[in-house]
Image (cartoon, rainbow, N blue to C red; front, side):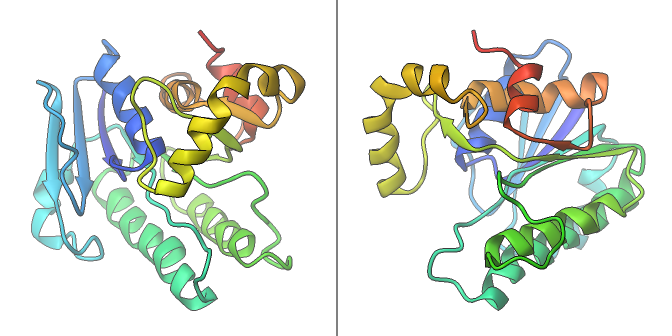
Amino acid sequence: MKVILFGATGMVGQAVLRECLLAPDVEVVLCVGRAPTGQQDPKLRELVRPDLFDLAPVEAELRGYDACFFCLGVSSAGMTEEAYRRVTYDLTLSVAGVMVRLNPTMALVYVSGSGTDSTEQGRSMWARVKGRTENALLRLPFRAVYLFRPGYIQPMHGVTSRTALYRAIYLGMGPLFPLWRALAPGLVSTSEQVGRAMLEVVRQRGPSRVLEVRDINALAPSS
């Protein structure tokens, strides 16, 4: 299997990259992003693109892939709806349009979030925009589209957030995570579970197109 990964330097992207590099059935991982991952592996290839809206110059390098993991995302905190939509909806659909044209038989896995509003009508700005993005992706003619809606993710195996505040939260939550997972298994996952589950849906086809926390954890039981 040959996979393309967008957002490999983010927390979820790091998690799925780790699982791809460990997986015997993954032949090549092409990471496309604005900055290099800083990792080295015989399977790993990288394309650094300052402007991800413009993939035309590298289209020849994007052909022949079986799956695309789209893990790019930003927090909506402090952003206007227009600015958030530009990053969340416009960029995602721009990339997805290129992917489906070049690789129509690929599966696309999009990382959304728990609480996403599929009606696009709710009060929460981020949830509306994410819902609009999900709905638009489902209309594209990929072999399959899977929408991941994780909740709280506990980083493992050196996976880290790029945001200092989040890193502090994860550090503080680490000792309590086993208890939280026991009390609220439908709200939390580990980064390992999310990464493994993303691989599993493209291997065996997911149980549904929208995967909530319990679905993610069922696909990749904690080790």
